[in-house]
Length: 376
Ligand SMILES: Cc1cc2nc3c(=O)[nH]c(=O)nc-3n(C[C@H](O)[C@H](O)[C@H](O)COP(=O)(O)O)c2cc1C
Image (cartoon, rainbow, N blue to C red; front, side, top):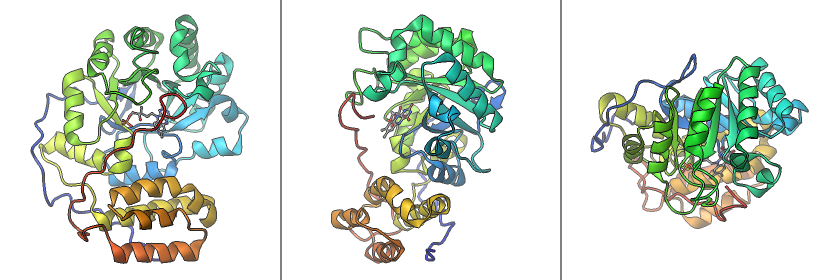
């Protein structure tokens, strides 16, 4: 077992307060039906990243209103595939939490939603935004936006099959000529959906171009009662302020920005309640957090599987920690516990480029996944 890790080193938010971001008139707290969220700042599903260890540390840092799993294949769920059951694992601190499902077969989706309700999920989210060809080709993800009657019928049936709130995550539409999210949001509200989350790009855009906040605003204006969660390119408190002010959305969902800065939810809640907010974690705090997250993964999967499974995540941590490129790359070559111990010792002694372990790190540029269709 690894030994060198202090567990709770996240305590510097009183230092270096920043109050330069004006606050908008915040809408009322966000509820999904009877489920009151802990804040309006939510973790977006990020397949391959939003596993239990990461969701757990975001709740431990605090500020996150709701966490959602990676997208889960509804059929594999009801067949109880081992890998799929791993995706829906949770722990007591992860409250509330949602599971995101995808699929296009009505009875499979309803059975999956019921199974999740029985297993204690607080909410079920339907993926209608995934642009990946493998998902779209089977009639799921973003392609559902091209078959309105069928899709609205499917969503209504899922809502009717469970008592927990059902939400939908979608893009603005298939392409710039078909901005259908406002229409769907209105229909889904009538079908009983508890909230919709909108990534402000079209399926055709993939991750290119910028988020169309006026499109998200149209969705906000299309619904009567349910909260709309704005999503896309929010990396800082200032970005969230723009999202809230320009769209009128009720909550903000953050994906890549949370990988670069898992403290962002706590910063946002502090900003909303006091007008100022502390810095994200410094080098030492990020190192402690990275080790803690690894340990959670190790507890679930054993050391060697955890090392392999943590490579993608380590890439984000080490970039955000401003570690020199060669040392970053060396994480990818680690194979066992001894090498991991030695790596963390070297990382700890070498520190960030420039050597400032306790000061604010330079802001990390957020990678755009390559290819509009093949990748997220
Ligand atoms: C690596 C990666 C995986 C993603 N996986 C999912 C997913 O499983 N389900 C989903 O609805 N969206 C997924 N998305 C989209 C994000 O939830 C989010 O809508 C998008 O990244 C824009 O928000 P951001 O700029 O805050 O990252 C993924 C995005 C990325 C980059």
